[in-house]
Length: 323
Image 1 (cartoon, rainbow, N blue to C red):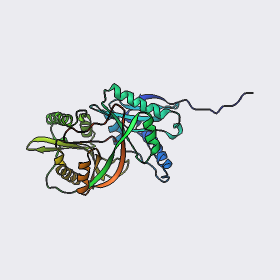
Image 2 (cartoon, one colour):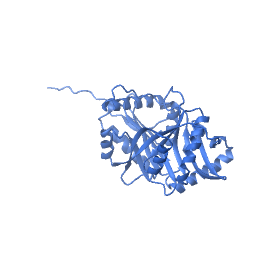
Image 3 (cartoon, rainbow, N blue to C red):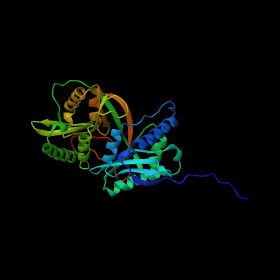
Image 4 (spheres, rainbow, N blue to C red):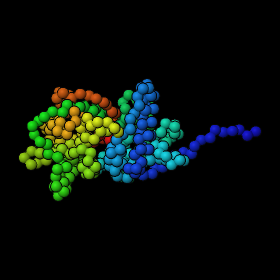
């Protein structure tokens, strides 16, 4: 006697390269997957909103070929992993699997594909961030070779006036921009040799997402902060200046840099400036708190075995692993 078997949809196929036109589909998968994640954690009333399409464009273009998607039998996106490599610092995020195809092994596939892409790109660091309270996520990534490290703590400082007009990349001439990009690259690599944020600085400028604030002492570059001011969430007002990358040749310059960035936020019409602080730099974290910083969020950094997160040999370098 024939036994009827339940029909199963074919396994989603990939990876394919995402394009900026995929932002609406990416938003749906992102929202559904993370809303379901919160529901499993007991936060039933939380609905994760869509991200600003400009942020998706930045993420896809910054990935430089590493924006990977998997498509189902209807050619709709079922999963994605946006993989980034800044110099030799590699990380994954965001990444998600649509709830209706979870449990099929697709999550492992998208992470392994990201690892393959980063190893082919000669990454020295391969990392990601996840919610520290979510044991399932930590266990999942640990089974794939990732180990938990320190936290990234989002700390905000209220916007305020310092009386000094910040120097910014966007106001420079084309020739001066080329020179400053070289300066910023040299500085990043002198502080932490694996990092080069040239592409992120150029994209932020060309897409109008924010600014790179330059810190100088008698004309000499002493640091820079890559900041986004566009809303992260679609349809929201612009309230926050987000510091994605902060590089200082001397950690003693942090209070002055924070003051300058608080002034930049005020001049740009945002209420506060948000720092993504890696707690590898505990002294700097405590400095921010002493300056009135408020803790808003935490993420757990995880790194793949053999591809550890670097720490600045001198100065300070905070690099977000989220968009």
